[in-house]
Every structure is written in structure tokens, then in C-alpha cells.
Length: 109
Length: 116
Image 1 (cartoon, each protein chain N blue to C red):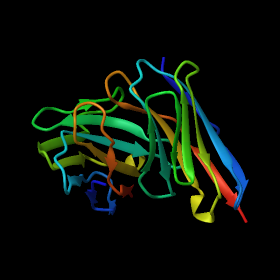
Image 2 (cartoon, chains in turn red, orange; image 1 turned 180 degrees about the vertical axis):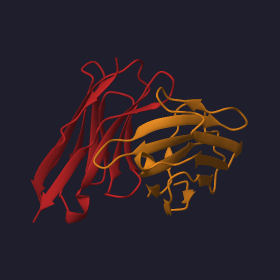
Image 3 (tube, rainbow over the protein chains, first blue to last red; image 1 turned 90 degrees about the horizontal axis):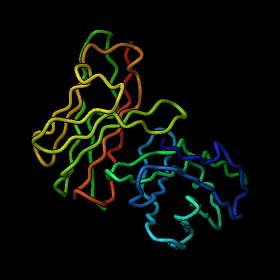
């Protein structure tokens, strides 16, 4: 079956660094996406990984290990506006996105 | 990035009525559009995938006669919730993709449906 796991909730302090992990087992793999979703809003694209390694984009970085079925999203210099849910999604062999349940990130001052 | 609009953003209706939600890609041609629903504190659940000019492909457990999807053009898809009931109250989100293989999905802002 298909399965994507990520922690339900995480708490971090403003200015700090947080790593949100995602493990997956899916039928086929055509890339892994990270999306940010604020409450009551649609998801917004953060990153896409299809090859192993680290992709850095400003304060956000995403890592992928295909052999381990593992990814993480790293957020640096946390700001209060980063409080949101972070969704991990896999594009399967049919080019459809399979979504994780999301990780609610709470930033404390 | 590409823009996807969704209308209306919020709708409240009486039980038994039908509601139509529009999803438009504003600056690109969407080969494929997706319809999702999301319950509070839950992840996105794919309802159906629609390709322009063909019938939508519904996910298991989604009633095609209840959730009518029309993808009449490369820039417009509509979702009609027929004979709505309170349990249909949810956040409905569309997304659009330009190509057939990998391409980023661009999300609409979502529609909050409340059925009384």
C-alpha cells in the first residue's frame, strides 16, 4: 500500500531551526513535494526533490534519500509567520500526488 | 508562478440544494485539474482528476453522481455538489497542472462550503 508519515505537530522557537521529517512507501516515485498551508488557505509550493540530496532555497531546505524513502524540510531563522502546516506529498507512478497528513508547526516567541 | 482562481471563496446553502464551484487557470492552459476536499486538521483528499475534454476520474469512495465535474476548456473546471447535505460541508480546493508529467500543481484559494 501507499503510506506517508510525518509528525502531527512540532513546536519551535522564533529564530531557531526546525527539521520536519517525512517517510514514505508508495507505488512508484516521480518526486517529492513540500507544501506550506496556513489555516483556512490553500497549500503553497515550497520545494520539489526528485534526486537524492539537499535543495536549498533561502531559509528553507529540503533533503531526499530515495533508498531510505525519507525526506526532511529544514526551516532556518524561524519567524512567527512560519507557523503553519507543512505537507509532504509524493508524485506516484501515475503522476498523482499522494499527500501526507501534514505537520502543524507552532512557533513560540 | 501561475495563478489559479476559485469561485466562490465561501458559500452557505440549505440542505438539498446544489452548489457549483469554479476553478480557473488565469495565465496558463491546464491540461489537468484536480479537485480535493479537506476536513479540519486533516490532509488533502483527492476527489477526482479531470483532463480537458474527457470524463473525470474519480477516486474510490467518491460518488460521481453527487460530485459532478466538468472540464470544458483548458482554463475552466467546475465541481457541482448536488443535493448537498451537512456532511458535505468542507473546504474544497482545486489545483491545475500544465503538463502531463511532472509539473508543479498550482492551487486555487479554496472554497469553504457550509451546508445548513
